Image (cartoon, rainbow, N blue to C red; front, side):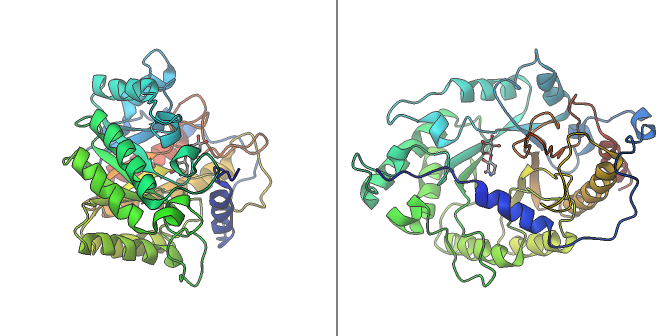
Length: 376
Ligand code: XIL
């Protein structure tokens, strides 16, 4: 039987490739210096207050974290004004078995957000990964017909969006539909996606129409990674332009923001300038900045002053850009809360990608960002 695997390896490979593109000259402290303590005597202003004049600030969370009885729940309430389900609203979490919805975890996140006055971003309705086989294959392992696939997609989107109507304010309607490594920029769509194979690119149009019918007030986003690279941003631009020209209800583009310590400032600015011309909102939906310069750099399991130095520079650059474009950017969400829990960690290679450490204490980079905002 033909099966489709969740395939995040290309994502990781590309992130690492991106990492090795540039290697800025640095004056850095010795690798094993303890991280400087002085910065930590400052008082941390909660992130959501720090950014209140600019955009809501969010985190991706697990149901376990969305609980005030945990340090994570407390940190969420103190610092964040928006949450996204890291996994539990994905198709395979909500409808692993056809016709049997499992709402418990997602309901709990939504309740936590409502109880604590937070927005909810819904992630995600249509994706080639983390989706159950029945969405793609029949009992013989053959791809479904276009008609059956679309009917099932409509049913799923209608059920999910209707359930959270009024509670989820923005949906990632389609995730990662564009081909992601193609320096010539000629292959537009991810052609190995079963969605594309069953339906062609118009599955994207249909998904947005279904979501809009179910909740006409929800903001509907196309979400992708590596979106700031010259060879990919044009594909996203062309696709969104096509949708808008066809009257498809799309309201925004999500830049996942799986960036790194040498992400290029001009790549981000150029992309925001280009997407602005589409007259859509931009949200940074999955921000994380791991500490390594390249995939070749040996992994570490302790944070150190070199990592701190790099992250201060990177996060200062990133947030200065986001503040400069805050008229366009309507949400900035980290893909996690603190360095204790991130999808980027490997057993001997921790990523330390956030502003909070493994104990959810603000890191020196936090205070660097705080200073930046206060100096605007
Ligand atoms: C990741 C989650 O963080 C992991 O826990 C899970 O095992 C795989 O998916 N782009 C996306 C997110 O849109 O849904 C992914 O989340 C990270 C990449």
